[in-house]
Length: 212
Figure 1 (cartoon, rainbow, N blue to C red):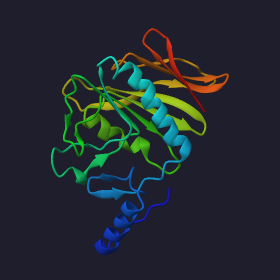
Figure 2: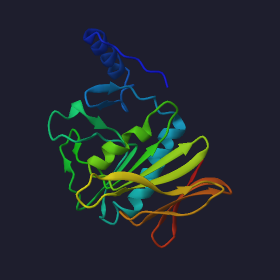
Figure 3: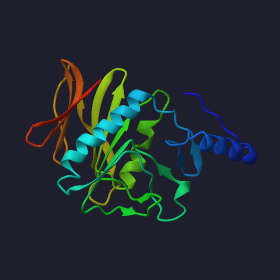
């Protein structure tokens, strides 16, 4: 992955302003004061996030279990949040969430989030942040090759130790196991005939087969 460091604040401000003017900054993030320019999501990436959100809404939002968002700012700060935030592709907050809706951003993480991997992004580098803000489960979708990995929050060294997101289930076309959430009555699975991501409810009923 290519990295670019700009030490001139005037040049940095100009570059950020240009990205905002071109609306190329939708998925940009700030990691502890460092501005991270994320790759522009291609059509497949955006379509996948939209369809996943719609399928999840049918279970979560329509049954008043919580709220689903396609992209939103998540920070560990109630104010001055632009110094440290991330933007998952899909966010699902439970009706009893501890996260606060600050209108500009969420102070605290969603119970469940989805990250669709794009070339050159740093999805796995976000795991500690998501764990620290209270995200309990994270689904990472790799597209080359296709793979679904569910990460779940755990405290390996006791209840007072820091929370960490650890992989618990991996699903590929050759390993078609169902990924079952603990946070919401949802399942996910790659299906090979035809190639789709199947989203189901806790009973195994198919809600949506998203073509790949």
